[in-house]
Length: 61
Image 1 (cartoon, one colour):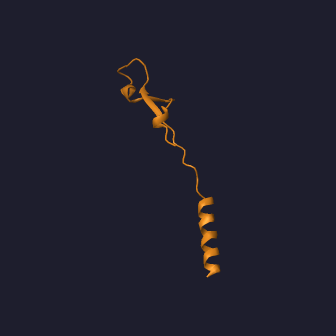
Image 2: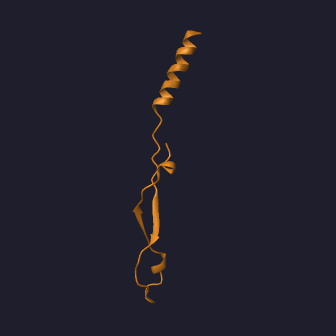
Image 3: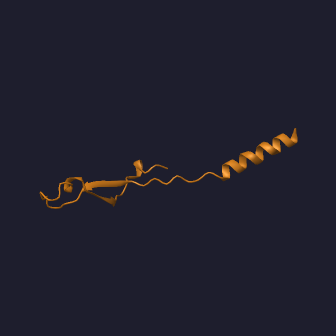
């Protein structure tokens, strides 16, 4: 019985030790301020990704 308990504890501790930390990044996507031209039809589809500050209540743990 002791071997089963020791084996269970060893597996439990090994499982807890292998957990990875989840990193969450938040980005704000806004259109780039560029002039539209007839030769570039995709100009409205471009965007720029920039870092944003996340308020503490929404930052998670």
